Length: 190
Image (cartoon, rainbow, N blue to C red; front, side, top):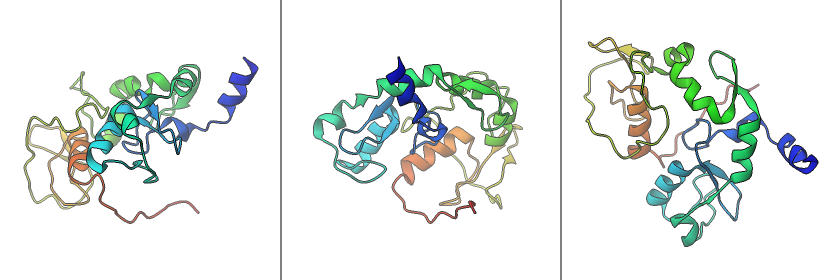
């Protein structure tokens, strides 16, 4: 138990977020060589796109790993025991329940464009590559939240300027069209 506790204290809250989808890990998997952790779905999607490289460091990933990534069971267990703050309401939630909390958190929905009148809307990356509708373009001027004629918030892709996306459709669009596009990032840390 003491060994498990010391291992748990070496984690920071950022360790429970997927570097691909930027959400709390869902079914975490770990690469053998570089030990990076991703959501299983994000990792498999990246493997289909890049072939043999880790989505984070571009290190090699074995063929066996690409087909059947090893679950990070140690991290899953730690996520069941420890809590973190919701990104928007600061409520303390067990990490393994965070995605479920986002579905009912009004502040999260307001920030990320998820409508509270869609109770079963998935915030996870489960639907990557499975878009059933195509998006339409309009002349929306900014990346900021806009409202469609149906009253639902919409967003504009910051990379190609295509617009009228819900938050989930924007994530799906970026993952299917811009996943490996290198874009400069401006840090706000001082």
